Image 1 (cartoon, rainbow, N blue to C red):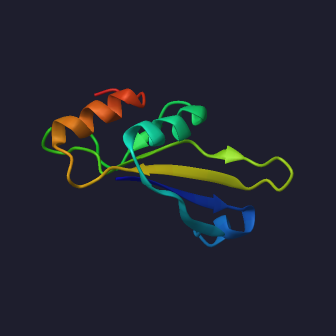
Image 2 (tube, rainbow, N blue to C red):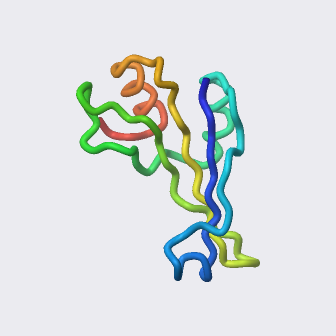
Length: 101
């Protein structure tokens, strides 16, 4: 199952190199459910490994932070891929979310 985590970074927490808040936004999602949630955030920005290949498939995909203009805080989201997926399936999912392979 897929999970989505979030991390909120404020100006103050960034000074210490930490997040103000972090945790799970969604757990135990199907691929369809994960896609429905993350498609509103645009394409993924990066994966945890580079370059992506069958030898180095992604374990998670990350999206650019969205700023809350009232507080200045940024919220970053990551989609975590199940370990049970094959490397080729992980690469197909990375492509689905807009990463170049």
